[in-house]
Figure 1: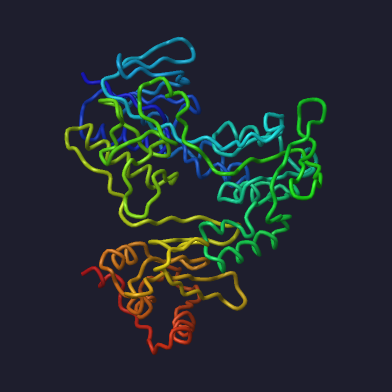
Figure 2: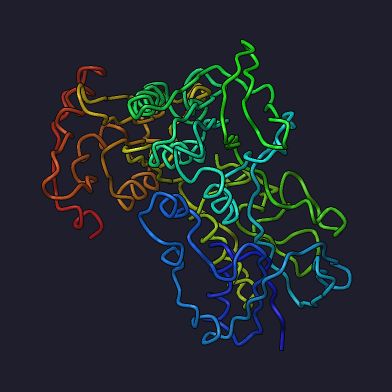
Length: 446
């Protein structure tokens, strides 16, 4: 019986295992040293905040794996050999495979800061990081202050977590506005306001120089590069992005870049070895998408795709239009298509509307020459993915999108709608006379 081994039990690896089982009787083994069972990584913050227990983050009962004949092995992989199709574990054990799927995820970036190895210094990605944070920052009596370094999604999640336990937080962001490499200026400014409104000490244009040792191997302060200021702290969160977890593959014979290099079939340079999820790096560009995408839904899609190939139905990875969602403190964020940050291409124009009082805004991107709709970001307003995906595929004009914007609203029945105000501002800005129209959104797909 052909043996399929998957290294990594995150969303990509587990999705691959489930879909291979649906389509075959192959022997399947999932290997992970992080946890015995698959869990929802994005829910780790809510465990710390007391909204759920860790076992609630596991989508499947523990009996699920045996019932579906998916073998689980809790172990850390030291290296693999593509030539002999063998996996060597740190315990000294080994395992053979017929086909191997690498779904090893990411590791927090470390940039060689002096003191980054001290106690109390950590990232926030793995289950073990959550356990460390419980030890390092159980409450505001043990942790008098925390410093977070890095202004991305993981950084703001960690700030919210610590804030929930009344621990003062200083947030170092090297850019002049939060996440402005991704978000347009108006949205980035809104997030800055939300962070500070929650009592977080946000320091923009600020870089970490070093982490100070207390003499016993733990951090006691950080030093700011620009000013030399020392900030006393008991915890330092290093959240300056992630990097593919591939260092153990350097002697495997597999071609590596930042991640594991793959083609559109998710094949590596070694026969019968594939890579999916955060660790996979596309050799050829897929539209405007990044070569490496550390996103939950792309990991799931890669898992579904590779399962088809493993089961004899070769399928190219096709993620479609970009979309994502996140939460900045109390503000929900959605993006569909492409809305650029500070380095937007010359052809992209943007329309931005912000509510005069509430933390709500919308940015719509369109082609300056053709008026083709390119994408939308929403803060504090929920929109329907299906509709924007359809409009992007059909190449709709931005005026059409504004006309039927009400159809895309997904907010609950008693939420106040804002489409009239958005379209009014659009008309004023662009000299238009669009009247917003509402159909039944279901009829759009009839």
